[in-house]
Image (cartoon, rainbow, N blue to C red; front, side):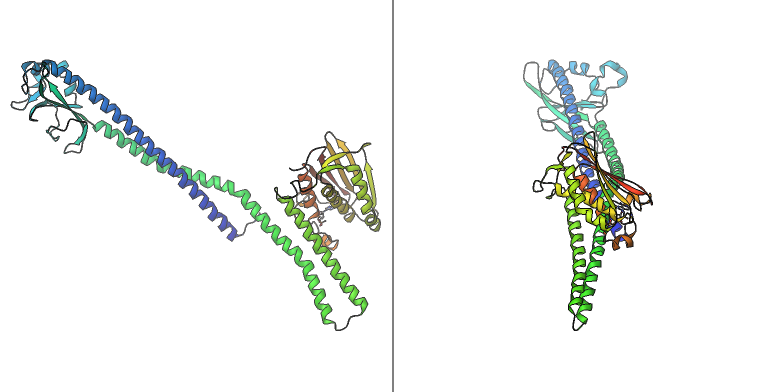
Length: 458
Ligand code: ADP
């Protein structure tokens, strides 16, 4: 199949457009999913970190309150229980004097502690407290603050009471979000690298898939174009002949009655040819459309007795066979009426095309036989002739529209190359099959198989 460059351009453009829409759609969905995953990770981590901070701060708060007595004053007990606390008015104790197990949570590098009196003055802080982080008492709710290096901290304050229930001061616990932020950075990096990679892969597969999807469209586009060009060409021939006849007649000043009759006879032939061509095209276009009248209830579906139909057909074409000096033999091999469900007119047309072809393509003295038999649930109708036959390399194409093995010969015989394509379309509309066997100079055998008692396309 050759498609011209301008059509190629049209299909390439459409392919591009389809692929781009596909890529944009999928990319948008991926971006939304990526964003959703990112947000879900942030949310899950934040909840975990907040819970952790709440637990640590709560435990420290409870431990402190047991040993606090005078508001704003740290007792020796506190200094003993939390040896790694640095007091504002004295230097931090040396770690050498403190056993490892007593350093505990507040010096493990993630949690930082500050103790304020009731007037928000800093009294003590944990040894590991980051240098660049604000030392101020923050509001009593969870907040996120940033140190001078850009590291984020989640901070929470608790009011402390003495062991007698008096207000003592405040405990402020901070937790570094550095590990959390680093993890998020990794997630962002993976998403940013993964998304374009996924889009590239989607783009490649979209291009391939659109190409596959476009193939049948391109094929049927080509077929429609070919069909239109062939139809126009076929219609032009009788129209040109009609025009030529009219023009040449008009040039003659006075016509005898005989000349007038001859002219009208020529015009009648051309018009007949034109009209049969138009009705063939109409049949084909109706059969092409699954929702049109052919397949719906407006077309009569009935029981067709093939025995009767064949004998009617033989009667109708008998004269044509006699004038062509062809012996026409009906060979009914069933002793009962063989019935199918379908449209009588269409089945008649199908067999008519095959039989007329058989007569037309069989030289004088030859024979055309119409055989009717049953095979399982199918009626088999065979049209066998002893004619010119069809070359093996032509066989795959003879059911194509406007295809003629010998164009000149076929046209002289009045053929348009639509007979077999109509026959095939009618067989398919009745859920049947059509096959052909042929040997050049020996003859052809057309075999039609139609289901018995089955409704046609509905
Ligand atoms: P046409 O109107 O030309 O007969 P058809 O579609 O009926 O068109 O047939 C297509 C071509 O198949 C014909 O041009 C002819 O060459 C070939 N053909 C059809 N029937 C026969 C046959 N019985 N014997 C030999 N050739 C045939």
